[in-house]
Image (cartoon, rainbow, N blue to C red; front, side):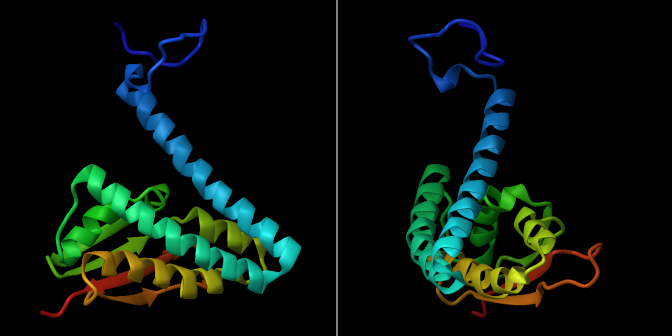
Length: 184
């Protein structure tokens, strides 16, 4: 059976995603990543509009406490990512559906020390365009919590330190930079 390059044509009662070519599966993965990012933004904005900023934030935290736990377990199980060092955290970061929407680099100093630099970030760009200052909340509260949660899944002693975070004044500058370190 030949690989599908799209799903044009007649309805296939025996359809299976496994029939898509690798290129189509990668395009589909990108579309799903963008879709989940937008769902997150849409529900947050709807909650903020209906109940206000504080209630939306409280809901966001409750949702992501559960979602992050599910995502970490699912991704590490499916891809067999295990370990208790910063290198294991960085492997997870490479496959993380959220981070893959950004242009970034990971500078591994050693297995227990790395610097993650984001050059693009769709969330930051949207918040900067909005112009209400919400990037400070996102980048100085939510992202540190997220990176701590991810790191502590692998080892609770890993420390995450923001080296450079928004708000930015120079929009040609990097979006953010984070240090992940484990002192043994």
